[in-house]
Image (cartoon, rainbow, N blue to C red):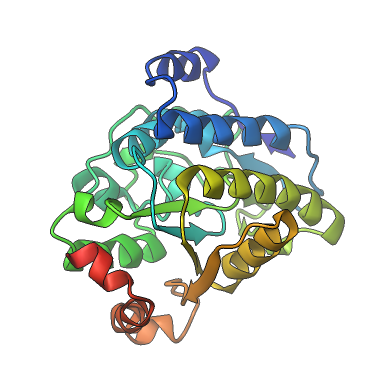
Length: 266
């Protein structure tokens, strides 16, 4: 098993540019503390590569947070962990390259992980592949919002776990694929960071994108004694047959039901 890395000086330099005490700086600090704790974990032989975009894609990730997480939020959309053609390339949750680059206008150098699977190279914002889930997720909000600022005025998007796991064959593994002992160690660290982020942002609702994220948020907040409403929207993954039948319509109905459409289209 190999863990990825990135030039430490790039991270240090970018951190020094943040405004002291800002919401963005405090959010990024929570994530860096999470990464430090995750580096102490070991993973089973089934996980041959661990990609950490909060290292090698720190620059665009920081740009995303600094652009869109400058204030407290009402709603936090929560994903599970990076995909190989989404956050694994761009450092942005559900980060389909074209939408991150052209709609969100996120910028920054993406470095090479210390170890890459030949079938999962990191090309950053020049990656030619599209993450279907990310294209559906951000594509929907692009279609209903006047611009990114209209979405992020009240909402933010975050992943529960920042790590991408890859098997020897190149298959994408999720936290749910890990053996129970390693999975719980990983998720406990991520639960702690999520609770800190929720307290910082002051959100009144978490929307898990998929059941795993929803259930983990409920467990984490309950254990920490944090009273925040937790809901769920269908994951836009192409592996989900229902999502392939018109995910845009499904999520629109759900967000109208939750009162979120009014927040992002006002």
